[in-house]
Image (cartoon, rainbow, N blue to C red; front, top):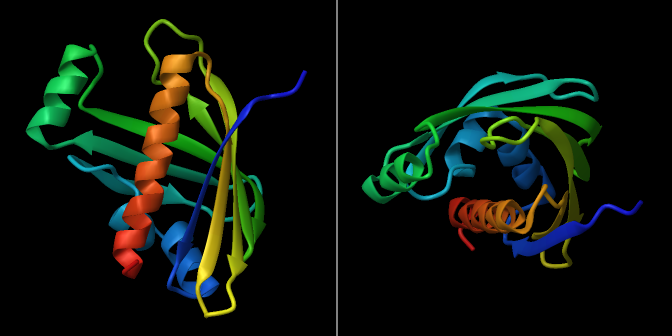
Amino acid sequence: MTTQKIRIERTYPAAPEKIWELWTTAAGIEAWWAPEGFTVHVDALDLRPGGTLTYTMTATGPEQVAFMEGAGLPLSTTSHKTFTHVEPTRSLAYTTLADFVPDVEPYEFLTEVQLRPTTDGGTHVTMTADTMHDEEWTGRLAAGRANEMDNLGKVVGS
């Protein structure tokens, strides 16, 4: 069985070392990971294969709070990721525990991130992620990950 993937690519005007730092440190993640109207707090980060990233995302914007409440979702959710691959400044992979979907048994899905230097000193980032259990949640995942990548661009000035 082949797992379907979503793929998102961006090029940033920052060296791979800077992008890596933003993707793999608590301060970096907290600076860009959350979509508009949400905040992220890193609770634990152990950057190694088998290590984990745990963070809490909280809806803070009025529209986001209303959406979460209307969907019957809590305003704060804690996410758990387990690193499966760590190659500094080049690639990163992790599974995410999807334990936040009402009436769906928890399951894991994989995200892989590739960083490649560009000829002008920037970084081309390719993110691929397994699709989720249905089209609606896969759409939410794709939109969320695209938003994360756009937010990363704002932090590095693209």
